Length: 327
Image 1 (tube, one colour):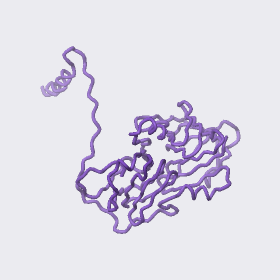
Image 2 (image 1 turned 45 degrees about the vertical axis):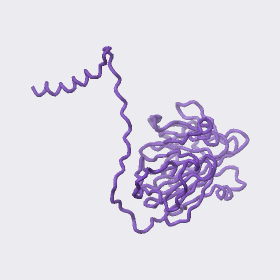
Image 3 (image 1 turned 90 degrees about the vertical axis):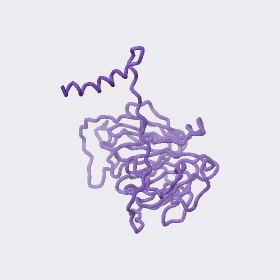
Image 4 (image 1 turned 180 degrees about the horizontal axis):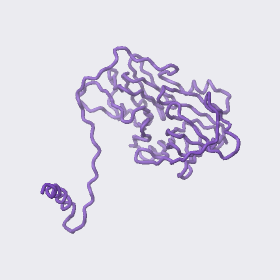
């Protein structure tokens, strides 16, 4: 008897799914959950957290270039905080990276200058130019070649200490040196190339997007179990007046980094004088540190927000009004 009674609700639901014409109605798409503002007691260190060794709040692209003046090809580490690492990779025209992949991590990069051809396993070739973002899943073979008469400059991000393996298409090992204390050896790996989904696409060019739609503000471009990256674009004219007392928010668990990808962004960090970073600059703030960001100037501005936790919590000051976009 009880077993039959349990079937009744299911049968009723099935009956409701059939419309008057006898056709089965499509199930409704569930809406995404909305954030619930909640007053909480949150702990915060009484001493401002220090920056990890070798990491500074603001890396200016102009200063990076000056350090490598006259070099045809170079790579500079921008930060490695033990969770994520970022490099600037500068390549002369015609430079081609050999076929490679990352066994357990996702790489993504932003084209800051120049033009590159990217071949990703299972995807049509991509011509990436200034404003392009390219997302390469784990265990997926890819190559990058600098096209045209000018060098290319790419901001490249991966998980800290991520490994790079090279396709063994020759009897000799790759020209790249192995990690310290390691040696190259031939092996076999049963790979499963990564898939793209609603949060991860192979390529987008933000400049093309805003050229086609002046209301373009970006969105999530990278999301997996190890990191997340959001494109955040807009105009200062669409923001409320600057409030110098606005401390923004902090993250309890994750640091946050940014690549200024277009225009200029104002940063106000706890314990530091506010500054304005320009296109190509890289900015970093530790966890548990108040920080406020803002588009600056008349032009469209864009920052790439990089965090170590997916959907990490924003700890805000108590407020009654909604938080405006772009801040």
